[in-house]
Amino acid sequence: MKIGIDKIGFATARYVLNMDDLAESHNVDPDKYSKGLLLNNLSITPINDDIVTLGASAAESILSEEDKKTIDMIIVATESSVDQSKAASTYIHSLLGIQPFARSIEMKEACYGATAALDYARLHVQKHPESKVLVIASDVARYGVNTPGEPTQGAG
Image (cartoon, rainbow, N blue to C red; front, top):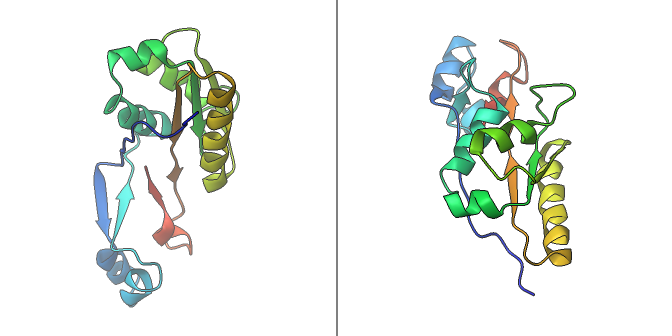
């Protein structure tokens, strides 16, 4: 059986901060960010965006009405949270109007969460060949102003 990724969507914050502007505001050589971190711009998430809105936006851009009827599992991989008890996948499940019997889970641990989610989805489809799984990796990293982490934050 051939298992793979059928569709890929992407969403990021609407606002962008140029790293040269950040370097200038901190009186730092711009090369520290452009060459040291390989960054030219930073996505800035407004207060009304989070992992749910970003994840749902990315998925909405690729899902058909038929997909929403046939997806039987939703996995959100993130290291960010919107609720300390309810999985972000349940909010996305509802926002996208995916059929009500789809399982919804969330996986943590930064980038590996997305790798684990893809592996879990593959195993699920291996066991249930008629299944469709929606995997979403979404994070919003926010660090304090003028901290070492500030130039590495972003969202998507």
